[in-house]
Length: 370
Length: 187
Image 1 (cartoon, chains in turn yellow, blue):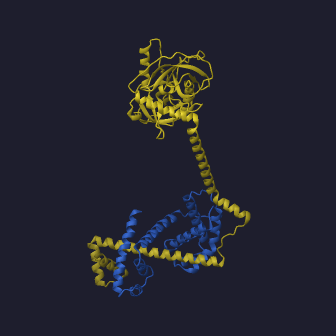
Image 2: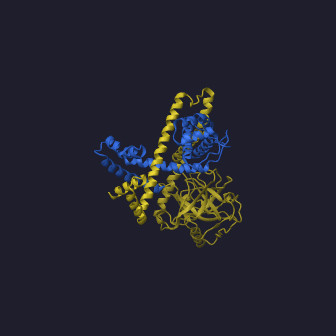
Image 3: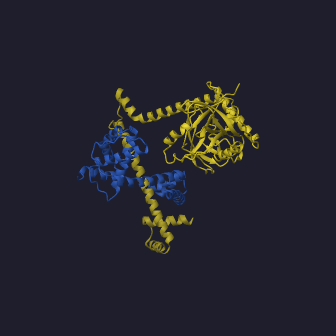
């Protein structure tokens, strides 16, 4: 209520309705009470704003009236476009919208196509089998966790066009023909062949497997294989940090495929400390493929992926390779495998790194022996 | 270029919201602006909108005693419309190849900034008035904008006497002020 009395006083003061006595009293109040003064300033500002608003609103109203009048008189008219001119006008007006619409339509059709392709691949016979196989071996990994098995398989020098019931990926850790891959990749294989990126097949034999870490060492037994010296990469002994970026190479299809990702957890499935969790795209056939750091070190071996979550991939840690080789040495003194220590990939750009790596990554092919 | 007598008269008329002055400026300028906007990716509705906004800018200027037009009204209106339209195109992301100038233009950046400020205040007041609801809105409108007397208002709104209407009016004003300043501080 006080506020209303005050407002009334202020309005009377501003409009000059106050008697001289009242006026001088009010001015005295303004001088002594800053709150009153503040209120006078604020209110006069507000009333001015209201006044301006009213004037602007009336003016806008006047504009509308004038416009309507002139339109009725025909002074203002919409240009009537006919025939070709109209088409050109509409085209000019909407060409941007059309471009956007067209690109959205194109994008959607590509998306649909992409999804269709994925679904058909998933459900085509050969791939379905591989997915199944990988899940099966994963289950085996958990049951065999405490057992370590090793066995020698004599080389099978049979020269036939390899029958590919299973495929995976492997990479050289010694130019003399020793490869690392996953144990589950070769566990069901009878006749094992490795296929180079150039398309050459070499027969190979399992030298050692360790199911606990899901790793295996293969030896190329084919006489046509020529020893490669100086592998350009090395194998990391220590753990990788979260967020470390890497790239992968593998054979999810009949051709080498490149992938990129980052280390997303320091343990694998179910807290498995011998593995990492990665975020990368991987598909059946990627198993056994190298995970390569930006400086050209092998930091892991792709093992499995979570079937339920997108992009969650598990990889055996690279230091397991060293453990594996120690076991091999214990087992037999004849094998002299030297882990590569090359660093020529360091500082190269990615395309060059991949070009150099391609020749050392192999597709592992085997038949079920049935 | 000094301002012609005709333009000076028009400007004076505009300041007083004179119907004839507004109509004359419309007649002289609207079609130039419409063809400019149509040629630059716009529609007739957008042309009307832009022209009205330019008229408001000119109106605000005409009321400012320190303002003196240094060019023809035609050039001024064209310059304002061109600037407003370029801005609109940018906001709509409807980029066009270089907007063509068919006429002389004068710099109007400062005026438009000032106009924008005034326009924001206008919108704030409009919003606040929209929120106080009836009968407050009509009551304040009648007293402060239409300048009706308290006696007339009391009769019109069915108050028993002018004093009752006055109390009601102040209550409404307090609410309007609160709404206005709450938004004002947010901007």
